[in-house]
Length: 233
Image (cartoon, rainbow, N blue to C red; front, side):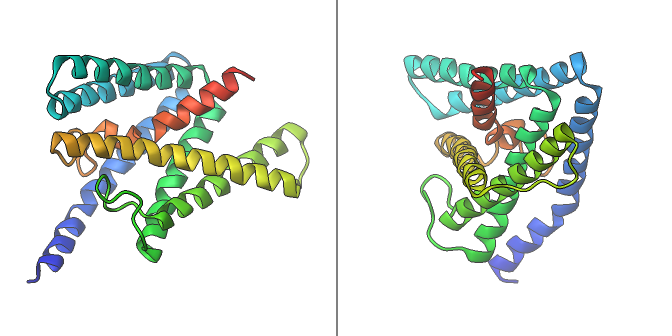
C-alpha cells in the first residue's frame, strides 16, 4: 500500500470519531445557548479556562526564557479571557452570529482550498492554508452574515421580503472579509505556536479534533471584534 493511500485510510478511519465528537460538541453548545443566563456564562467560562490552560502549556513548550514566557502568557491571557468576557456580554442572537461566522469561514475555506488549491499563504506556519481557502472563508462569512442579517431584519420589521441595496451588499462583503481574515489570523497564530512547541494539537481532550484551542483559535479574534464594535455602539 502506498504511503498516500495509508494516510487517507488512517484519516478515514478516524472520521466516525470526529463526527461523534462534533455532534457532542454541537449538542452541548446548543444546550448552553438555549439555557442561556448563568448556564451559558458557565459554559463560556469553562471553554475559556480550558483554552487558556492549553495555551499556557503550548507557550511553556515553545519558549525558553522566563521573561518571554511571562510576556507571552500575560498577552495570551488577555487575548483569550477578554474574548470570553465579550461573549458573555453579547445577546444570544449575536453569539449565534459570531459562532456561525467562524463555522462558515472554516467550512468554505476547507472546501475552496481542497477544490481549487493554489498558492499557500504561509507554508512555513500552516502548509494547508491557501489563498483560495481565504477567498472561500470570505465567501462563507459574507453568505452567513447576509442570511443572519436578513432573518434578523425580517424579525424586527415584520416584512415578508427584504432585499439588500448594492451599498449594503458591499458592506456585508467588507465585514465578511474582515472577519474571515481575523478568523484565519487566529488559526495561524495557534498553528505557529504549535509548530514552535513541536506538537500537532493543543491537546487530545476532544477525540479526533485535538484540543479546545484547536476549535476556538478562529473564534477568539472574531469575538474580540464583535465585542469591541458592539460595545462601542
